[in-house]
Amino acid sequence: MPNNYVYEEYQGFDSLYFAEITLDDSTAYTAGSPEVLAPAGEISVKTDRSSEPKYYDNQPYLIVTAEGFDEATLTVPVLPIALVARLLGKVTDTTTGALLDTGETQTKYFAIGYRLRFTDGTYRYVWRHKGTFRLDEEAAKAKDASTDTHNHKLIFTGITTKYKFTLPNNLKRSSKQIVVDARDGKADVEAWFTQVVTPDNLTLITVTP
Image (cartoon, rainbow, N blue to C red; front, top):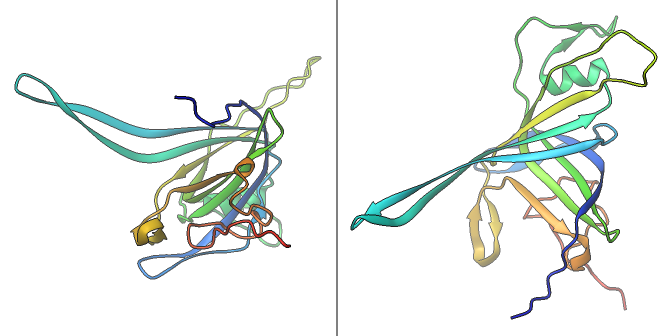
């Protein structure tokens, strides 16, 4: 039976934002106003999943599956010291601007938002609702006659929220991310980066007569 799905490939990544989580418990989920994180270079996401077949009557009878954290690797230009300190929970000297790394961190949780461009020119919009940042290897080399440069690989480890949002059929569930394809023409993405979009504040497109 034919379906009405549209199949495309990704051909772009931009509008990379972050917002600090100010509250996430059984009573509420709140986040600060989104800010530009950095110019977006590349993104790759992998999810920790496991599955194991269970055997009954001498044959595989069912498969038990579990899903864990997400890990998004963000390729961005070298980040300013103040932003690195903020994302990693480090301390800066406000007078000199120096990063004062004691080897300790203060865990801070953030949400990240971005969009992925399809080859047809439409976009997929994403907000990942809770996670922490860390920097991957930082590398540089002596300048030579080549055009080689080095950037930052920023790792965002995403988990689910403690707060349970209201889903269809009045289900209450935690959230890891929300994803919308603009070409579906249903969810309103006009103000996607003015707030962290969640199941509780996602709205339908309203058409003015």
